[in-house]
Image (cartoon, rainbow, N blue to C red; front, side, top):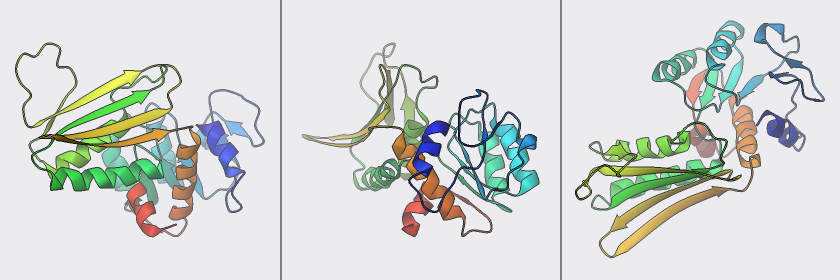
Length: 238
């Protein structure tokens, strides 16, 4: 994702990658560092697509430097998420489990449908490449939490193979599929009596996430502090 962000940034007139943090020394047009403390360049915003193991060090750096940050790393603990929100009281920071503008748009649709169709069963299906390590995806979790805000009694079910009996009305099945080079696909199914609605998003490449991250960074340029997500970027029209 770091390479993709750098590639997409070349298409922007108002964005430039000046340095990076990486464990691999790959050829780049900008310097790469292995530690945040080594960064010499001045910059406006950090874009983070790394791993949860790196996030504590990243947050330490943000707190010390006061730099804006866009965080797209998934599989973060509740404590880390709370810390990110706390940092937002002093520094502009945006956190999301999916940078895609399209995914965040369908999340708004899912919110509406979950409230408008209380008698419909809901299932979530997510598909990713065979190298993805976490399951379910952060986006599937995001979609479930959106549903949960509309229906407080719902709960996730990840495996029905050991369960005998009919489906509970408050179940939301979350199914994870892994294979090949699938970039990312998410479907939310609303199944009622004699009718089914399916909301689906497919990412054709990682470029959609890089583009969303760069737009999020530009959105933060006009902010002095605050904890934001991609819904705020969509609402701004920027």
